[in-house]
Length: 93
Image (cartoon, rainbow, N blue to C red; front, side, top):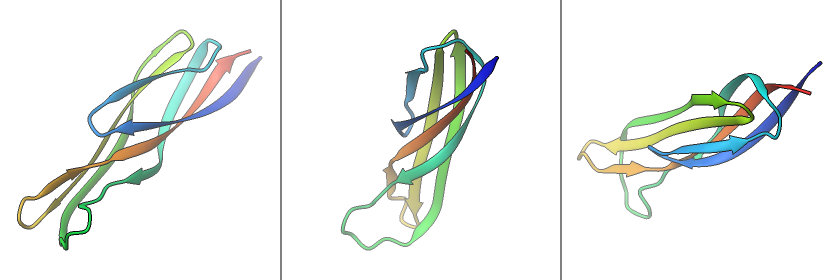
């Protein structure tokens, strides 16, 4: 009988993170639960904002997730942030 497990990881933009769910994973998906990116206290007009969470791999009880969180203004100032990635996995009981 399969069970559904959930886990959240905070991943810096451009990084991957391995999450161990403690039982064999049959199938998994990821979703953006939240994100954070800032230029700090300076005044910027945002031109582009890109936030993405991806499933990078499955192996046994481990899920590898990756994330991108970037922001750019009209003056080509760039900022990287972090993404709170939600993992939803169907696991062997």
